[in-house]
Length: 308
Picture 1 (cartoon, rainbow, N blue to C red):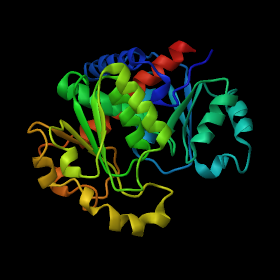
Picture 2: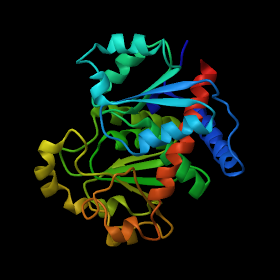
Picture 3: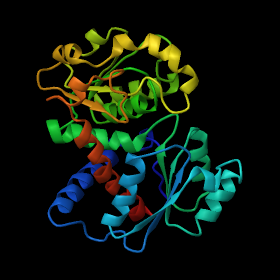
Picture 4: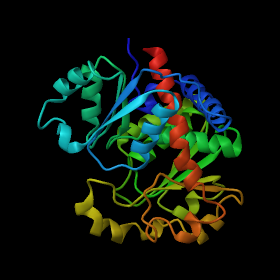
């Protein structure tokens, strides 16, 4: 059976921890002279429906550092589900490349790719979740605190795909998760139910509050994301009216744990969900977090190719 990397919810805590341990090992190797060519002769096909900086470059470099190669496929080249059916794209690419990474709008698209592909499929982002980002986030928290067990992680803002994956990985690994956002912008009910289930299994807690100041009390990690994600441009004006109380600024950070870190998956709309003073300040983990996309994804790739 081929293994895919579609959602954090598909993996056990042990599997996630094992991949994170491998990411730490691969990162150390990289900075000590380079990684061994574990993926020599392997090619990753990368399908993009959305623009990308971190996802494209980190996957491309991950394959190169591990001795493999990556092939970029732009939205115009494929027209996933429009020019050609997703099932046909999956079956054609399976004969050309050894794995497929897809950054899509609809989560159903990546599920359908995985259904029809005979090679591993990686969710590089969908409207439901962003599991590769969550792995980099967990790696960043591990590097700072040594564990996720008992760590208080607060997400301030829209209950979007990044929030979903973060909740799932934090609760699976024993961290406490709080979400604070305005009414009407909560996470999908199904995702919340899973988060509560994972927390019950690991002995951690999940909280929801409309008050961001209440949410950051004792938080060791404050996480935020853009108020308007790609594909939601029509809602931007309304969102800009609703979200200002949830801005991560110096005042809000001062109310959290004194050693807290602030995280953001980027790109950031500075002056909206996060201020320059915080993004560039002493609590910021934004750029180590972005760099960890490379190392976390190396671990994902190695595990998937080993499983295959």
